[in-house]
Amino acid sequence: MTKAELNNFKRILETKRDELERIVRNRDAITIEKSADALDEVQHAAERELAIRNLDRESNLLRNVRSALRRIDEGSFGVCLHCEEDISPKRLAAVPWAPFCIQCQEQADRNRDDANEMFEDILVNAA
Image 1: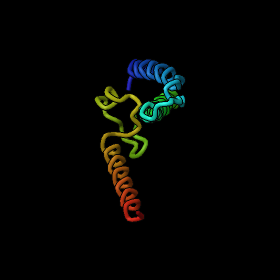
Image 2 (image 1 turned 90 degrees about the vertical axis):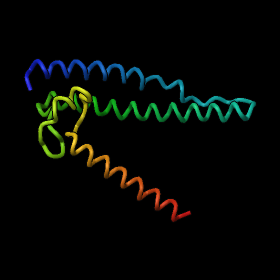
Image 3 (image 1 turned 180 degrees about the vertical axis):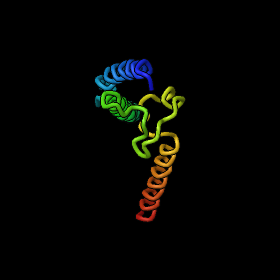
């Protein structure tokens, strides 16, 4: 990867990091609001749950972006953390913070799905 390409990715990642840091700092949506109306309480709880999930997703993405910026500084950006092969330029263009090549990412996703299914089976059998 050329120095110009690395600088371009660094600029993109820094912009994304700044955007995510602003989003993660704003936690007004997860405040607990009390209401005399039970339906309003349920609505507030559902909105808070959605806001918490969004905050969690954005926090995870921020960790991935910061990790990619560290890999740029260390000189390992664009190399799969699992198999150590180059990550395709198309994948990096689409997801600059990607830590894995597409094959390793697919395997990680399958493993996560299998673990979730196993966990759900355990919960169903426990009930």
